[in-house]
Amino acid sequence: EPEVTQTPSHQVTQMGQEVILRCVPISNHLYFYWYRQILGQKVEFLVSFYNNEISEKSEIFDDQFSVERPDGSNFTLKIRSTKLEDSAMYFCASMGAGQAYEQYFGPGTRLTVT
Amino acid sequence: GQSLEQPSEVTAVEGAIVQINCTYQTSGFYGLSWYQQHDGGAPTFLSYNALDGLEETGRFSSFLSRSDSYGYLLLQELQMKDSASYFCAVREGGSYIPTFGRGTSLIVHP
Image 1 (cartoon, rainbow over the protein chains, first blue to last red):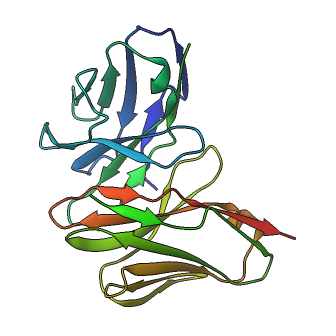
Image 2 (image 1 turned 90 degrees about the horizontal axis):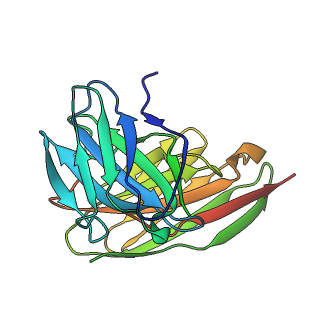
């Protein structure tokens, strides 16, 4: 069964450093998303991406964040200058055309900012 | 904006039936989804209701009442592996983005 993959599974970085989280969505999916989940809290939407551009973003997704689909398979989230409060699990998700409600989530990247 | 309310924790024994409720406030309601998340794992889609009524998928069923802004997830013949967090999520018209509730931790005892 096709699945969303994410790398790395765990990233430790120092405050102020840049990080890039990588995702490979399911190959025939058209909609891509990033979410984050602070430990013990709910899943929070960051950004959605369709047709090579951002379609929606939340208030969390400020100028420190950016997304890119550099080729036909990868979807990345960059945090330019990490803060302690960026420590969270980051989930990538993808959705196929005609499936307006079923998102497939990757296993997540645990980001720890020290 | 949207708000969702669901219980923080529910406990039950193996073999039992449990219902996890979700009430929501939103404008332009389009549908209610349910996701399961095991500790340290990714959310996994369980069900989606756009219309009133009950949707059944194996041991899991989901119900929606649009007039009451209310839904629930029903889990039957509980198994230990059902111990997880369960999130309801609403989708507003014009957006593909679900807004997640805070989740209900289901603990299944032997």
